Length: 299
Length: 316
Image (tube, rainbow over all chains, first blue to last red; front, side):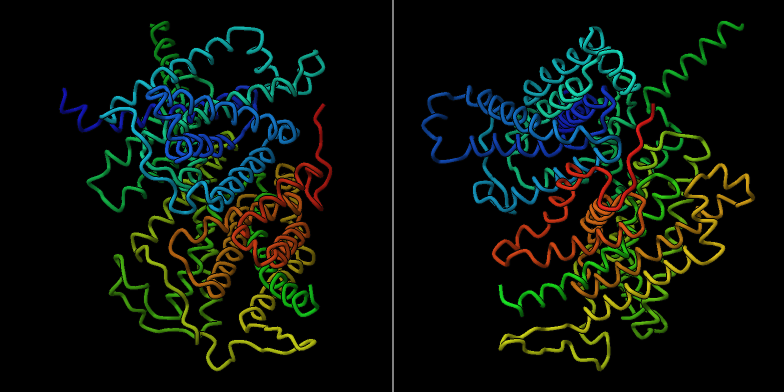
């Protein structure tokens, strides 16, 4: 068993880390908003942690705080993400559907070019030697695990209170929801900012986990991968992002013997999942369960 | 801000902007028929550049599985360009068969088509990398034969250079745009295409074979993508299998800026972004890649339907 964790510990933690990014897309999607901005906030959150962890001017603070520097980095990323999330969210959420998705893609691209050109972010090389919180990569589960549980709790809690009903009302029909007195803009911005904040904090936790941080963390491909977690896992189930991340993160590892052609197979899986599992893995499981139940009842 | 600089930037902007327009039209055509953005368009763009390279130079680079392969014949640049574009058109048709038709038949969420087209893009891009290697290589400088590299003239004592490739970019784009305009505006096929774009169900009731027209649209879209891939590849050098990704995104910026689904909008959007990049002061040139997206974000906030897009309809 210990050999298993030695070999696959990094992979397991990565699955939880990526599932968090999937959840950050799930939040705005609860209110019907397709946003790809998460990865931009993830990138910025990582830079906040990387800069706070390595900048020479902050060395006395790091010595004074020790391990508590990490929560301070998360807080920094959280504050930045919330402020920026509100600033981007209010104007951008006037857009709908594919327009919103493209506006958020534009945001991610602008963030990417901006960090590439900021001297403090280390240019194309990025930031190296970020202080480690733990000896082993597997221990980073103590960062990502609680955050994941908290995010799941939040999704579950929102789904069971008035705010959640307002989110779903906006998702199903924004115009009707507005006519019924639901504050559509407020709810959309709340859902959007929740996603931004989660992505920002995940980024701040990931910078030490990955040891280096650079602009490659915030590419368009990464945004789409996150969206794929949700869609392939199932966009109507809170376990969807975890399922999708588990499949898509472990697939390249499982296919490692195939070497260069494994990315091709990754694409094949993406297409096949879209065609044969349009409701995602969780949706497919639910359909299977109701079919089995239906057969049982008939017999 | 002297006149020579203005003229030079204008020339640079028009030539590159016209290619952006041709590339973006590939997105627009598919969007106007299916209401979906084809994310594999950037991969077809890369494929077009590689195919033309192989046809004109005679081999597929020096790495990868096809390293030892040499073409039995090589073509002059212009026939290679045309053949490469036609083959890209076929690749576009394959994209529709793989990523779009199966989903359409099952009536799946249009959002999924976006992901499945990304899956196809992943397949194409990695297949290219597998077959020809990941290294960056460029078209040889003498690809146009005896033509001079550039014409330089002086205005007010300052030099203005027009590169041969710029004239070719602009000319080829103009020919493509005019041809497309003629096809859509003047022919029976174009009329059927417009009818399908307006309402696919009604069009099929009127006896238009919708599936065939969708396939045809993907052919034209792939052709435009492959052609612009070659043109930009010749202009800047083919930069590896991932070369199409950033242009794919820029093309999206172009069509949203101009107005999703609007053909004149795509042309205008391409020119605006090309000119925007060309007029960026040289001390800010590292921000060039952000120009398209800053313009896109700005226009979405001021005029969400884009420069020439129709009014966005509110369902009630």
